[in-house]
Length: 131
Ligand code: MN
Image (cartoon, rainbow, N blue to C red; front, side):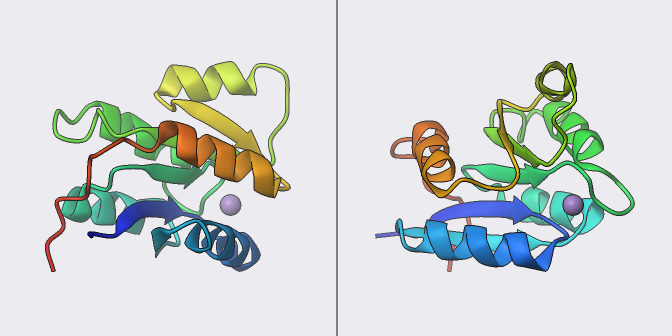
């Protein structure tokens, strides 16, 4: 069986470690990118079935990344879950408007993360990345 890949763009080491540990325990394989530019590059190369996207990133931020994805026919169907500490009123709408499919607030709640990833992970759609 092929790996159930998730691409996670996050500049914070601590969050990467938590999310990786939680989702690995659920049978997912996490590919990490630490900023928007390298994240976008990895997404174009791998075409992952699901993307977890930090919004506050150095350089190109998460909203800019998702706008690039949604403008690309090959990538626009990939579900994107935003992860952010930002909890200002209107933020959720801003993320959804930019093209994110849903939103998780930090600090990350383990059960919420698992539930949301399971909900959005495409059934029977494995990554096109070949060994
Ligand atoms: Mn960040």
